[in-house]
Amino acid sequence: MRRAADDYSMQLRSRYNFLRIMIVVASIAVITWSSAAGATATPNSDVARSPLSSKGDVLSAGELSKSPAVADSTNLVALQWRGDTSVKIAVEARSDSGTWHRVATVGEADGGADSGSVDSVVAAAKLRDGLLSSEPVSVRNVDEVRVRVLDGDLADARLIAISETHSAPPVPLGPGLIAGGAAGSFVAIGMVIPRRRLLGGVAVLIVGGAFIGSSLSSPQAANALIPNQPAIISRAAWGADESLRLTSCPDGPNFVQPEFVVVHHTATSNGDTPAQSAATVRSIYTYYVLGRGYCDHGYNFLIDRYGQIFEGRFGGVNRGVIGAHATDFNAGSVGIALIGDFSNTTPPAAMQDALNRLLLWKMTVNHIDPNVPVATRGAVIDPIIGHRDAGAISGDGTACPGNAGYSILPALRNFLRASVPIGVPWSNLELIQRTPGSVRFAGWALDPDSPDPIDIHAYVDSDGTRHLADLERPDIGAAFPENGAEHGFDITLPISPGGHSICLYAISIGKGRNDIIGCARTTGSPIGFFEGIGREPGWIGVSGWSLDPDTRDSILVDVYVDGRYIHTTGAVVPRADIAAVFSGYGEQHGFWARVPVGPGLHTVCLWGISVLADPPALIGCRVA
Image (cartoon, rainbow, N blue to C red; front, side, top):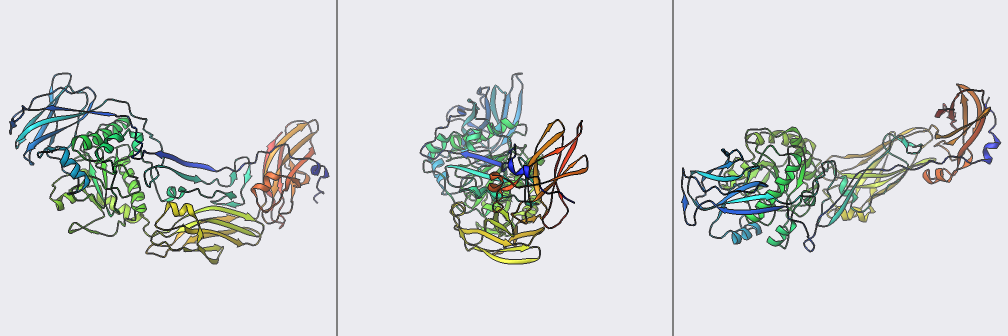
C-alpha cells in the first residue's frame, strides 16, 4: 500500500535545474563568395610565357624546341602555337639531376567553349591570328621544359608555365555544405534531432525520431534539406583570384536549365596531395583564363582522388551555369572533371563516391531525370555521358575521361537511376508536440513537379486522415521560387491515452512516388529525470521531475533504497522550466523527498507511477 505524498515536498523546490532543450546543428556551412561589384581576391598563380622557337620559325616532326627555364614553383605547363591542329607533341622536362624525361604527349586541347558563346568570342579576341592551345601538363620540381614534335608543324611555339606564388586560404577537408542560388552569402542548416533524452535529462514524449519543442526553419534553410547535398569546397576556399574572371567577363556567367552531365578527367598528375589538389584547381583556372582566353574555369565541378569536391565556374553550385568544357555541349550540361589521368588507372573509390554523391544531389536539385534520354545537338544521348561521347557528335575527337575513367560510367548511371528522387515530394518535419489527448505536427512539403499544394496523409496507428500543405511559408518560397510559398502544414491529431505509432506521408501529384515525411511513436509511460541526490547523517534527499504524457495532473513517484520500497512523494513542485518545454502540461511536476537510511553507500531508484495503472516507469538510479 502506497503512503500519502510527503507534504514536506510541497514546501521545497528542487535544488537542481539542469533542464535545456538540445538542438544539435549538425551541418552549418557559411560559404561566401564575392559579387562582381566587390571581388578582392589575392592572386595565387603567376603565368610566364617563353618562346620555344625564334619568331617565324617552324618546328617540324623530329625537331626539338628551345628549353626555357621555369620557376621552382611551377605547377602546370601548356603549349601554344600557330599551324596544324592535328599535331602530336612530347613535353619533356629536366630535373635537378640534369636528366631529361618525357612528362606527357599532348595535342590541341580537346574541349572548350561553345561556338558563338561569350567564352569563344572573348578567347578569339585575346588569341588573335589562330593561336592554338594544348591541354595543361603537370610538372613539379623541374628546372627546364622543352618539346619534341612528333607529328605536324608548330609555328611561333611558346611555353606557358603556371606557378604557385602565394599561399592560398586553407582548404576545408571536413564535412560542410555550400549553399546554392544567386551570387551572395548563404547559410545552409541541417539538424540532428536528439532521440530519447535531451541534454540535462529531459526525456521526450515522442520516441523514435522526433522531439518536443519547436525548431521552425529559417529562410533558405530548406536548401540543406535537398537529399544528399555534399560538402563542396568554395572558390574562396581553394583560392580563386576573382579578378581574373571579372577582367575577362565583367558581366558574369550565363545560365540555362541543365539537362545532362558530362564527365571529364583533367589528364594531370595522379600524385597530388589534398593540398596540391587545390593548387591544381587554381592552376587550371588560371590557364583557362590567361592561357586559353576564356571567361572563367571551364568545369562546373572538380573532384580529387580523396573525394574533395571543388566548386568550378562561378555562379552558384545549384544553378545551371554554362561552362567551357565540351565544345558545343556546354549549354544545358554539368561539366565534372576528375582530377588526374584515368587513361589506364581506375578512379579511386573515394573519388567515385564523391561523384555519386555530387550527382545525386545535383540531378535532384536541377530536376535531371537519369532515366530519360536527352535529345540535343541532333542526337539522342544518355543523361550521363563522357566527354568522348560529346566529342564524337561535335567532331571534337577526344579519349576523355580516359578508358579507365569511362569504364565507371555504367555503374554511375545505374546508381543514379535507382537513387535520384525525381518527382518525389520534398519535405521537412519541424515540430512534433505532444499534449494530453493530442499530438501536433508542423513543417512543410512540396512536389518539385508542381507549385500546387500537396496532400498530407496522417496515420495514428491504422486510422488515416487527409490534410493539405497550403500554409504560407515565405522561407520556402524563397528557397524554391519555382514552387511558390504555400507549402506549410500545421496539423493537430487527437490521440487516446497510451502509446501510438504515428506517420505522415507527402502525396505526389506528379510522376514520382509518395514519400514519408516522418514517423513517431508516442509513449503512455511516465517520463522524468533524477536530477539531484544529497546525503546527511541518517538521511538521503532526492530531487527531480516526472510527468505522465496522458495527463496534465501531477503524478506520484516511488522511492526505492537498495531494492526496497521506502517512500512515495508527489511530483507537485512548480517547475516553470518543465512547463516551458512541455506545452499544455502545466508547472507542477517537480519533486523533492527525504528518506531515512543506515550507514554506508546506498542505491536509490525513483519510479514514476502511471495514471492508467500501467507498470511504473524507472526515472533513474543513483548512489549516495
